[in-house]
Picture 1 (cartoon, rainbow, N blue to C red):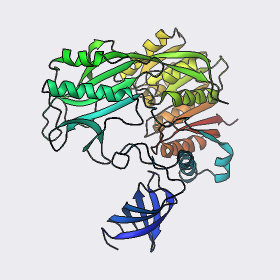
Picture 2 (cartoon, helix red, strand yellow; picture 1 turned 30 degrees about the horizontal axis):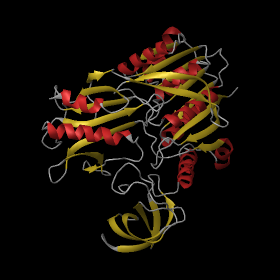
Picture 3 (cartoon, rainbow, N blue to C red; picture 1 turned 45 degrees about the vertical axis):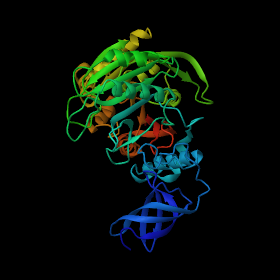
Picture 4 (cartoon, rainbow, N blue to C red; picture 1 turned 120 degrees about the vertical axis):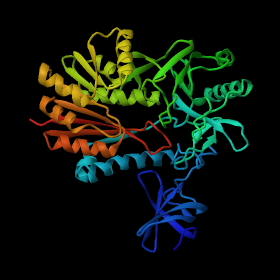
Length: 468
């Protein structure tokens, strides 16, 4: 076999990134956009000693799990790896991904994992669920200004007028921004030369309040003819905040450190409601949040309510507990916990996020929440060793790299009755719960929550109890 050969494959499995897996003459092939059960003709794109990569040339016999994607760009865009897969099969794939990582990386027995895993929490509608979108701005080959998304594993922009995962309002907003740039002769940023002004358009939408925020990321300190931009955006119903973020660095990081409000408020407001974890009906008081351009806020509000309600249920609070919330962001989980805890302490490394968290606590009239700026692996040991603080329950919601071992060791020293681990990466989750398990904490419950339909990502909540 050689590169560019056409081969016939039966797709028998799914890889961790959603690629189809088929075998031929002892070689394993990973095929993007192939669905388990497909019979395909594929072109070899890369060969290694025992495995290779290929792309779909023709679907000879479609899988029973294959469905017609709503987005015609799904194969080119890097955002929706498994949109061609039936949604029920997507949920099964994500649940198995977490389960396999707990077995393979966590060292747990398959029967034990089956006994503690609860059914995955799926979406009622896996489209139009994102409250945030970041569109790079550039030019096509003809020199036309375009907005869209990067093609998979590249920085080539695919023009996108209406992403099916984002809100419908994004289309009108992008048209207004591109119209402003054309009329006022504003050049988009060019990564190769470092010239041009507009780099990205960041859009946030409040699902409950219907408030809209637009933030242009610019390679400069001024936005020419900004009154024209404001006039166009102001006409869109729900427009609440228009701002400019300054990023003059040659970097892949989207947002710079400084943001200036051009019109309206520096934030939008949205609400998260507590839900009953049996049927996930809304119940109890809603918590309001101010969200700025740089705030970390979960992109799927419908599923966020379910995810945080699960975390609160697993925390098992009675109103008497002292709770630490590590990697707390703008205090989203902290304020949920504060409804049923005696005292909550949040820790986050980003100073602006802690300012937002304190403001959100005041906004909701909660005086049983305190926040610390710093790394969890530094703040927690300092508070434990110097100030003898303790915790009945500790909640962690770390980034993809998981928890630092110093942080995990301090959790063990503090000896909370319960640890609730909220994870966006099941591989590091498995590693960390194994570490805690070897130091006296037993996994009691595991439940996945699909926050990112049509992608391979999944959130997971784990409840761990300290053994007597």
